Image (cartoon, rainbow, N blue to C red; front, side, top):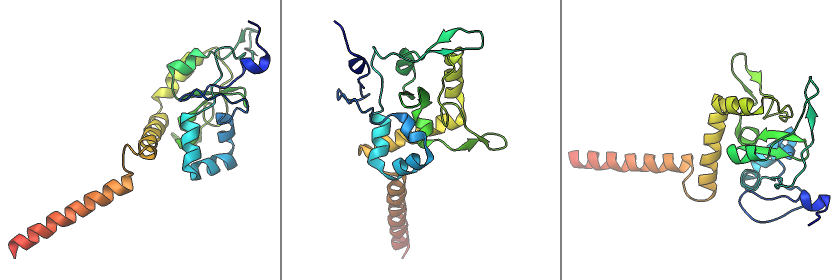
Length: 186
């Protein structure tokens, strides 16, 4: 069966069978400062960028990049299956960590270094990509961003109350317990 280029590029959303040629929720859009702020303010958009991230299908043709020795390499779709936080951007022609883009800090580490590859700029050099992705998983800012994204999803889907509500409930419980203790002493 002969497919057109448009059919080969159809987006497959990570949590639905919806197909969209507009590449809506391409993580590359969320990297731009102005868009990122807007997405973070609109919680349904933030949820959609996490759960409906544009993902190329198995027939997508990734651009080749050449290393300094002239070897051609490209992004591998199976990396997305291995690392559920990884997203390929058609717009940026490279990969990003969607949880770090959406929930990560701007700076980290000694001297407050600006975060670069996978957060602000796409991963486009693939020679040591598996090593780079593994190291990214080990970074504290990535672990924190992952936890924040999971907590956000639980709250958004109604599976967990927000931290504020949990703290408020705990405070109310403590106040009631203290009132009972005071009443029993009077």
